[in-house]
Image 1 (cartoon, one colour):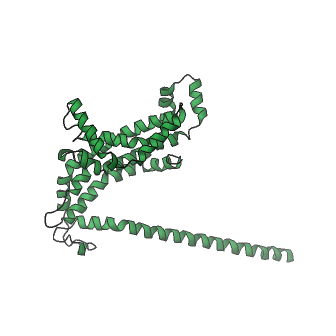
Image 2 (tube, one colour):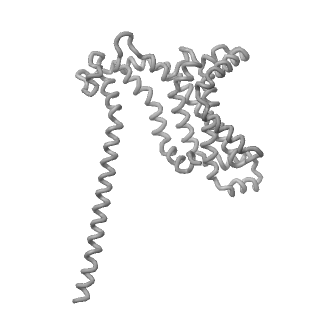
Image 3 (tube, one colour):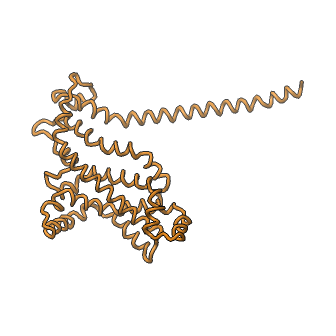
Length: 302
């Protein structure tokens, strides 16, 4: 009996420690969930103001009543915003979709060559690529306008390169090559060299290895680049103002032009802002899980 009592006395402190550890874990989890809930609420406050204001008539859309719910709910601001933004949204689609796809393809090829088919001076070339990431838009604006204007003259396609969407796509693709190359190069470094060597032993050349071995496992990196470039192209304002005309203005420029002469149509501006943000949210929802996988795989490391 004494031995049994001693064993029980020894187990009691360990059981108490286990219960305290469980309580601490629950308390820490509660604190984390509370902090996350607070951050979510703070993050959603602007969204609430946008959404509520977008359903107010112009007589109620006033900064002093930004937090109040509409007394009269109306879809008129959304209708007006769509009528004003529709041409710009279509221009943004023509800009962002081909621009992000072309940037991803070129970045993938560059990253593949710089990581798996190295050549003399590859590090110098990669360094020069990286320098392109640090050139501000303002520093190349005048030469870019001159270049695109010259392309219009040489090709005879007036308003296509300078003043049109194709020239804007070209500018963003060229400007996006450095970051796309960096992302793909760092991702392809994680592919084992043995896989590439095995393809070479089997007689596969550079393009065959890229098409059959590297490209099938590049989904996460493509998701990172497409989300990155699509967001950059969709939100572009400076290049669009300088390089395109009114018929080719994307969503951001059209959104900036929604303003009243004497009174500011806040409800229309809020509805337009929500409409302009929907495509980027849809792209992230569709590719978000691949985006995180690409980040974890090293697409932005190094």
